[in-house]
Amino acid sequence: MRLKIAIQKSGRLSEASLKLLEKCGLKFARSKDKLFWFGRDLPVDLLLVRDEDIPRLLLEGVCQLGIVGENVAEEKVIEALKGKPAHRLGPRLESLQHLGFGQCKLMLAAPQDGPVATVADLEGRRIATSYPGLTRRYLEKNGIEAEVVLLNGSVEIAPGLGTADAIVDLVSTGTTLRANHLVALETVMDSQAALYRTPSRLSAEQDALLDKLIQRIEGVQQAMETKYVMLHAPRERVQAIAAILPGAEVPTVLSLDGQPDRVAVHAVCREAVFWEHLEELKSAGASAVLVLPVEKMLA
Ligand code: PRT
Image: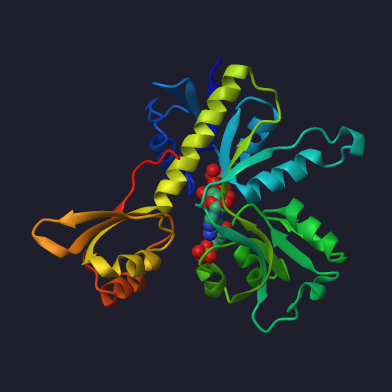
């Protein structure tokens, strides 16, 4: 039994999703135009689709895993549950892991110096969004009755055109809001790409494969955050230097040929190593400091 993973075909999440799976050792027989890539070494295939189709493919059990923004997953689940009686709500999508890319915020924004300055000002107004489910849930939570206008693109121009008083849209740098003279007022939802699994039952083989994949993804993520630091230091400063290394376990200390007072220190740092750390190390007596990326880790 093979596993099928759905990822975005082309867009903000495609490259990072593919890179992550390749770093996990998955190789595919690629076909530029085709939507289906056959897994070569492991029985794991790829389906390249629009990101908004991924939640449905998982809910229907067509794919067993999918990488999609939490914003899209939540919205599509709200849509799928709409109008269903409570006892028929059925299984949901299970988020297995945050993936650390595609970070953004779904935000309420409105024209600068306009009548909408807080969520309370939305009563009786029109809000444009591509996320009607999340927007309605947010309005309900705040006890606000307002009209939600669905727009599938260029949401940020709606207030300027007079078709809405405010918007709920994704923001990452804030450039688009500023260019349209809008200000972000409140965060409706924080989002990033996540790995989701189907609510359908998997075979024992698929379950084992999924566990292996999750372990590899964790390893890749840990490796990305981890650095290997090598430096020279006065022997008597080793303890002080080890204390500066961020997130380091016990370092390896090696003798240096012909230099009885100095040693080489090697350490795996599990937290980001900033320039400030290097400057501190230098002040503590370290020299020849090298910071290297770690490619793979298995705890
Ligand atoms: O065609 P398909 O349906 O597959 O893709 P899409 O066009 O719906 O999605 P795409 O590729 O634009 O985005 C995919 C996912 O990336 C989103 O669902 C989010 O999870 C995530 N993401 C992260 C973003 C952004 N950052 C983002 N900034 N998605 C969209 N934007 C847009 C936003 O809508 C606005 O128009 O970028 C603009 C704002 O950006 P800033 O930097 O100016 O604030």
